[in-house]
Image (cartoon, rainbow, N blue to C red; front, side, top):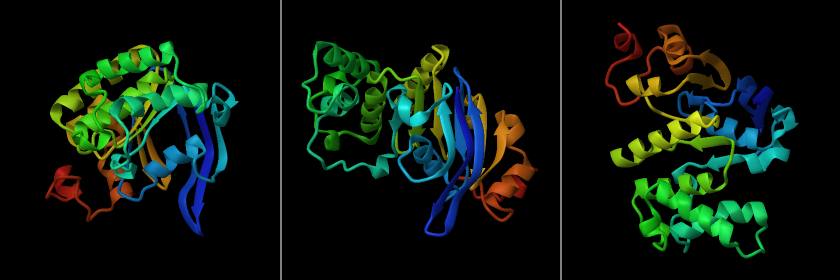
Length: 247
């Protein structure tokens, strides 16, 4: 179980996160939603210890920084240098290499784990393709394979559905369902809207503060959306205002 207590992040005097507390249980698929600049990616990075923060983050009662081997992180595609000369297989191999040590050659077991992970996301046939030459959906599948090769218990995914095709989306959702059935915990930072939010067991609605933490039906109320996005805002991908959308 992951516990976050009073997590705050301050960027040069600007409060990006303000005393966020939450609990994530095994076997949950959790959606992290909110407007641009709400602190969604910041929350994930703060939980991982990638940026300075205040508060406590524990996993199984142990500080999260001591359990990094149990955590798989899939960053936003926009934060990755796709021109870097590396193949799909080498990207997926980064996970076992991080666990065994960067200066040790990957053994047979690690190579088998990577091959299984690439096959699971239907990318084994492109294992030796340069990552920059793949489509957006294929690139996202490779990074999911890297996470799968880590054999983690907690998956933190930042905008995994952005810029992908329907085939990749369906494949990823099927894998998420399998992981959840295995008792894994998944947190998906998302800009999705409408019926797509019903795929999650729980939603975290964030705008610097954690405004709501409940089922999709309980979170997506007019009052909550107004608090998070503002009355004059529009639902993502819609020409309607929120007032029209919820009539």
